[in-house]
Structure formats: structure tokens, C-alpha cells
Image: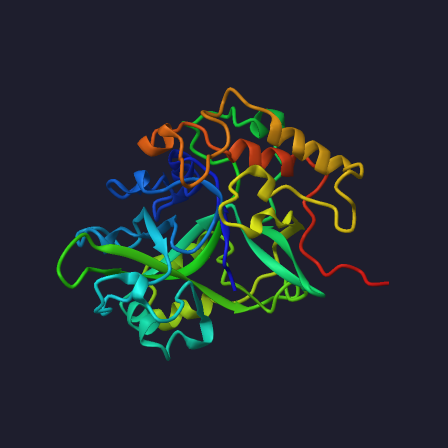
Length: 342
């Protein structure tokens, strides 16, 4: 399953991180849908009902656009079907935050948007999952392996106009979306659900389910291009993957009101807080505490009090430099694997 994510990039960085090559080989940066970048708030701790950046085919909003063209929309987590007749979406009687892959074609809430080509890709730095340990649960942060960069790239000085994105590689999760309009009229509400599958061997020791992750540009292209790839063909892209990294994090992430870099900071299991941190953890902590002149306003504030520049959607640098720095500058990014028991 997937119940919490992190997405800390500023709107302009999200667009750059989603760069792709079109059929002519040209690098394209998808734009935000009109006004949607103002609805998005970077966060270390996103929970259901919050808005996340979502990639969709531009044709869903412009009938004249090619289905291969992309746009970034801010959508609310938790799918509200277009046929829902209550005046308040909070009156939904069941959870639609996650959609089991084996139930997509059985449940009307998911089957309808799937057959109408309403496929989307949810973007995130990574997601959190909890492993049961006796009477407690230990949270982990899960993300794509990151390419190693040199010092200048770690600090994000390659330039915002650089065609190739050299920052944090965003996790790309397959999802479905729908558009609900209040029965009495009003602004349409776009919402999404994250498709889940049985956990891979890299993940099943943490939890028995995981998001359906699209690994690579071609998988993302096929999932989004509903004009060229029909639903029954696209479903074949939904399966577990092994190429993931993870590390344990503090239980501070358990409370969705906590929205600080500490949510993603690696911890050492079984070590008391006053114990000496490892070299990689110490390095990451230094990065988290360092205020770079490249970032405006430092780390995102709490959801209740977002920074003014985030409200205006004009932040130039988010936490991308911070995120990539502490992981890439560390000695290695260990693939997710079951810990040894002997």
C-alpha cells in the first residue's frame, strides 16, 4: 500500500525533473496546468487529501493536443468518482487512496477511468512504508537509486536552463484519476488513486504491498499515452520492481503534521538517540542543517503556514539540492534488500 509520500521540489524544479524526449528526440519540459502550481505545496510528509504533482496527457484538458504531450496537474490524493452524487466528497464511505491492481477491472470507481484512458503518473521524492515490529511499526523511506554527481551538480549549480535534469530522480507511480463536479455546480475537483501491487522481493520484508512504479521513460510514456496504448495493453506495465533504495527513518513521520527534513533523515535501528551517528548519517544531517544561498526560504514550512513564496508559486530552488546532496554524496545508495538474520 502507500499512505504517505514526500515531494520537496519547487514547482519549476518539478517541471525540469519531468523532462522527456518527444518522438522527434527533442527534450520537452511539461508545463503546469493553468493555476495548478499555486495549489501544490512542497512537503516532506504528504498524506491523503493533500495535493500532489501528477503527470497526465495534455489531451485530457485540450482535445486538440496530441495524447503523447504531457502536462503537470495538482490533484488531490483520494479518488472521487465522477458519478459520486453527494455534495461533499468527504462523505465517501470507503477509501480510494490506493487501488489494488487485481481489482481495477472489477470496481466501477477504477474501471470507468481506466477504460476512459484517465491514467496518470504521481510524482514524489519517495514514499513511506511501515514495517511491523512486535507492537510497534518502524517507518522506512523508499525511493529510486540516484545517479552519482560531482560537487557542483550536488549543489544544483548546473543551471536552471540546462536541458538535462541532473537533480533528484523523482519516483514515478502509476495511478488513475477522475474529475468530479458538485451536483449543484461548482469548480471541478481532480483526484487520483495510486495503483498497488504485491511487493517485490526488495520490499516484501517491509510490507506485502507496494505502489506500481513505472521504471524508465518508456514505461512512463506508454502509461500516459492513452491514444497509442490502449488500457488492456497498458495494464501489462503494472508489476512489482526491484530497483529501489530504502532506509529507516524516525517515527516523527507518523504524525502528518510533522513536515521537516527529519522525516527523511536516515536513522540507525537499535541505537539510542544520543549514540554517535554513522558517517553517512552525520553527513546527511549536516546537509539538512545547511542553508544554501541557492534555496529560497530553506525547507518547506508546515501545511498550515506555507511560505509566501510557495503560495505565489515562484520559488526558484526547493529542497532538490538538499535531497540529492545527502544521498549522492554518501558513499553509496544501497538497493533495497532484506536484512541478514544470521
